[in-house]
Figure 1 (tube, protein in one colour):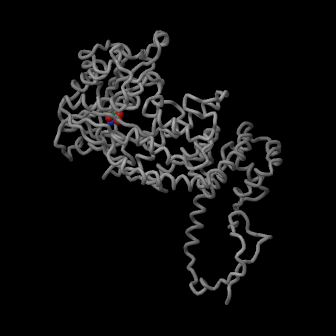
Figure 2 (cartoon, rainbow, N blue to C red; figure 1 turned 120 degrees about the vertical axis):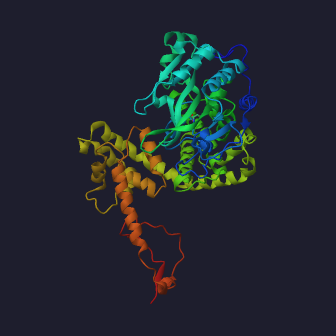
Figure 3 (cartoon, rainbow, N blue to C red; figure 1 turned 90 degrees about the horizontal axis):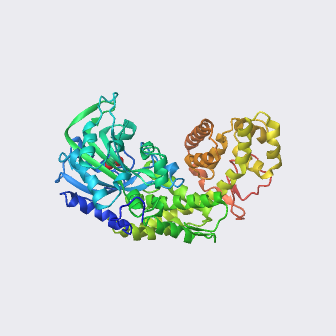
Length: 560
Ligand code: SER
């Protein structure tokens, strides 16, 4: 029996059943079941992606829009990868963050308020789903002088009066945790969260759960956020009370599934298991048979593989859902975020799982098998989503391998500077001097005309601070297509910063060059004047690295 469930709880429920159960529970209480909004917010330029269930109801909260119902229930597709709620770097490394997730919510638009929201949350979790009440904690807002808002004693009293929670399990928390804002402006208000403590009895006796609430403990986690929308936040930070009061709740669906299925991690649930298995099946490495079937003795290496499997399983959900909602990978805005996520998944697959051929698009099928029934339009777009992902994978993989080799080759030489503050430069450069391949590669990064001295010394000058030189970050970007965030991420994984100032300077210079180049008019009279004299092999452009070429062959001459 799962330790955190009462004997009445049924841990064999599938994620589909849990989702339906939530929707039906609130439908029975007069809520209209509404579809998830698109991940790409319509008509809201303040938001890159839908990051909470409330986004589609923002106008109702602000009093500028209306719905034909005053109570609603839904599951909302959410992405938290940028802006106020940014989880990307943690995803995969821990076992409970996700870029894409579903948020189950019940809504009141000027209808019921705190009393019902609290009572029903307890009824669903404890009476219907059988969570052990002694493992639950409620938090309420402690008030905030800067906002001019006092402690939410009303919510505190309601938890006490309407549930079996004793006072020591109702906690006052600061605005950082218990005042919900969608962004810097917009509808907002105090919130009350339900947390669950899933630790075994000994651990619970040793450290009371109340000390671990909001402390990033993987087994003491927030399940449900009940937001009491009462204000509109203005850009100057002031709060204006709204005419009507609303309820916006958000339950982390993946976490709830983990709890109800008696699993410690969301990745162990039926939402992720088929994806993790599919990635393991695609991996050509014989020692990777499944997420829990790894034949790897080294603990570190095994953990790296598990992280990579989690990254890929998480990211394919984001990529497929974003594309189905119209956010195609590209070089700017939303598309750039999706491109970064896709490249991160490809990189983990390539580096750790031996996946050197395009593989992500092959995960769309198992994903849709699991989710296609819930979200409109997904299954119909399968082929389109697969093709879009495959094309993007192919172009990135072409350059990725070479870029990673370059990075790996050069980083140990940078790290050496970090450890010693670079004081004994000559000693530090000794090993680099022996590394002809690294030197060759560095030649490419240090071609800039402003630099003087040998490559060795140019490198030493820029690596002295112990950060990855801007020249290297720039080359990775310019030649190997690495977004700067990817380079920073890889550097951070080695404990290195990136010299962003150096990188930006080179980027600016490149842009100036591009502008200057576009000022040249093409002389139409000469366009057809070149005469080929030899077809030969394909030629390569070497002008980035060299301005004199000794062994060049003449292939064409221009007449006239
Ligand atoms: N808006 C709140 C959240 O996203 C509750 O839905 O947590």
